[in-house]
Image 1 (cartoon, one colour):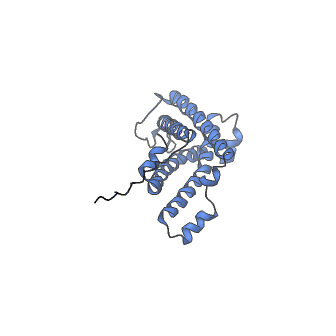
Image 2 (image 1 turned 90 degrees about the horizontal axis):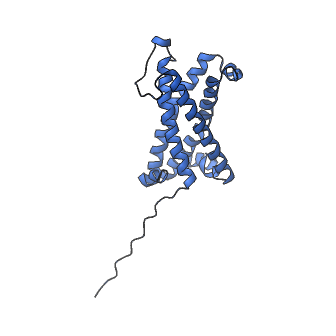
Image 3 (image 1 turned 45 degrees about the vertical axis):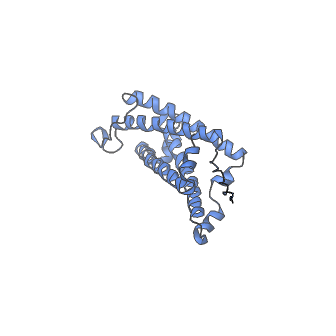
Length: 199
């Protein structure tokens, strides 16, 4: 007498659109260049304490101030254009309904019982909250890039030093976002979901 063994259901791997994968890779590369070149710019003229002020670890790109600026602003345009086309992509494809926080997410956090649903809600809150931070980083960066042409940006922030401080503070915020974004993705979909964003 033989018994049929139960069939194992195939494991469905998460799939991401090629555009989403491209967006993440361009972000990783451009952010790495901006971080390395930004540290080069910072150490050439520290935000806090002037030239004799606090210096940061040497993870440098660009050689010195002029080279660091060239790399930094080149990567800034790559990063900005990447955000622009991805924003248009999720707008046209209506994916923004699934990317940003909504009323259902707030309800899930208040009365929901499903831990994964709550993690997903937090994920969308974090995803939504980073948008104004990125816009602030780009706006302040443009003001530092061409302060004479975009003097109104400098005036908006009060003065040059305030502009530098705001721009500098967006860096740890973006790094923290990347960490939380990755951890929440792991909690919702495991390592397969995280890997699917790149491969």
